[in-house]
Image 1 (cartoon, helix red, strand yellow):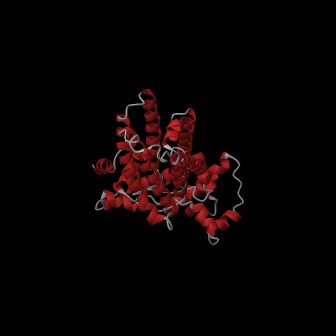
Image 2 (cartoon, helix red, strand yellow):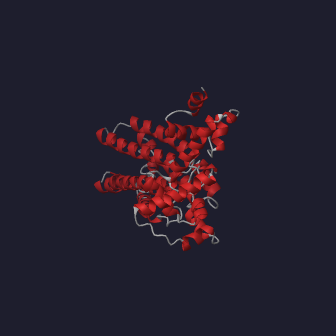
Image 3 (spheres, helix red, strand yellow):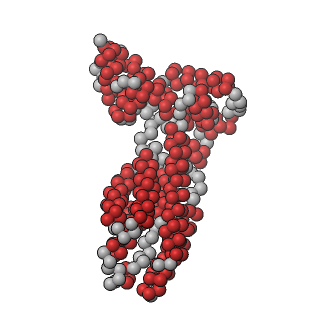
Length: 353
């Protein structure tokens, strides 16, 4: 699957190309345990110390993939994170082609354990934790930018990282407790294989969450870029923020712009000639919400009106959800319950009595 992604996406979708590379290396690292676990590396010296220890490389490659599909894809990609991993592979290749007796001495040395296990794992954990921090920042930016979040929050990436970090810590604890026990390694290898297929499927589905702010600025000057250049209002205190929030709220309720399912904060900025950062700050500070929550709250209020209206009885719940701007019934149910504390069906039954 990794090779397939590499072949299909090398030219067109470079983010998925990095996912393919990650999958390939993630799979190959399991090959380290096979000859050692079956004690066949002594019969076949060429299988001893296979250069497949990618502890320095896996998490950095996944970090680059994450950045490329995130809202921060317009920022400089941190390719320098790969340098220690590339050096690690070069050293492993040199050691791999040495005589078996020499490799045996090196494998039993403290320096080999330090470089390829202790420091490598520590480096991967640092990058993994940094990646989680990037995902938290990404989620905040997405919620402050888009009204439609599906396939944009990168929840599956976060789940995989937490799984990888936790199992990595656990397997190394178990290794030092019982270094000759390979059953737990087999068990975790099975889990890893399941994870490989899971992230491959999600990775193929996942599209890049482009920074629409950078996209707007890089193209032909639009009404939005004009607004950026001409918006001279200084937001210096809470009173200014409240005034701006009233302007935003008035526009949204008058025009019902929230009914647009793909509404973004950039669209709102273009209409109001206000910088999107000011809009985001106003919503965050005054309403203590992000843009997505604010828009959803307006949509739910509209849905409540439709559910109460007898003339809308012929609308299904799914029909109402689409009418007020939701892409899916599940997203509508989740937002509706969050705002009202009940489900749309129960709300409709209660108000029809």
